[in-house]
Amino acid sequence: MSRGVWYAIGAYLSWGLFPIYWKALHQVPALELICHRIVWSCLTLYILIAIRGRWSTFTEAFTQPRVIGLYLIASVLIGINWLLFIVAVNSGYIIETSLGYFINPLLSVVLGVIFFKEKLRRLQWVAIGLAAAAVLYLAIVYGALPKYALALALTFSLYGLVKKVAPLGAVVGMTLETTLLLIPGFAYLAWQGHNGQAAYLHVSQFKLVLLLCSGMVTTLPLLLFAGAAQRIPLAQIGLLQYMAPTIQFLLGALMFHERVTAIQLGGYVLVWISLALFGAEGVYHYQKSDLTAEQCAR
Image (cartoon, rainbow, N blue to C red; front, side, top):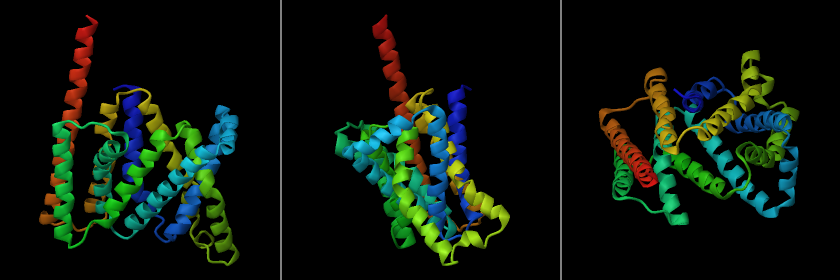
């Protein structure tokens, strides 16, 4: 396999195993955990852009109100997404979070149609219709909409929408996003510490190390993903991305023993069928376009 494929596998494997990491820190309140993630991610990213010599690009962004506005929206969306994910994981909804990330690519496609007037082929519409039917089915089975799944899918899809029109590169853009969250995040941790209520003052040394490493854990998969995106086709990345929610589903069911009945499983199977259809159609269209281009070149 190529280096790009290994990078993608590393990124999605890391994201898939995230529930284990955050479960180990379940004693830390979700809001405090997110603030640690912001602070230590910032420190990690500052070191990275210093090594890459990108400080001038980063600081120049603060002179452009439109850029700051876009990344402020992105930072709020990713902050909410991180918070929802940790709350869901530590509340016993790992399987439901996996559903959110299964739905996310299809929802991103719908947003592309709405905001960028992108055209969908017939089988792509069929796949999206099956996914919508699966969500409706699960809502009936659960007696309520899968709120964490839908909220995670919506916030991350909207985040992707903003990032599509944002002008900065992956590393500098993420540094700006986390910087915009840094002041409230650091202020909250300082206030908690001053009042003696901060969980990090009372956890074991092992969990304190986990908190300190949360920045590296956050940024490493993103760097691997960026490396993969530069080296392999998007169609290949599109198929590999389902590794993460598949691993999360298996973790929830097998490691953390979350209950999933045969009736509930039917909804997930419907989602998987829609994703298989969507992925197969995309690969077929990509190969067909590639073959047509080759024939025209002759």
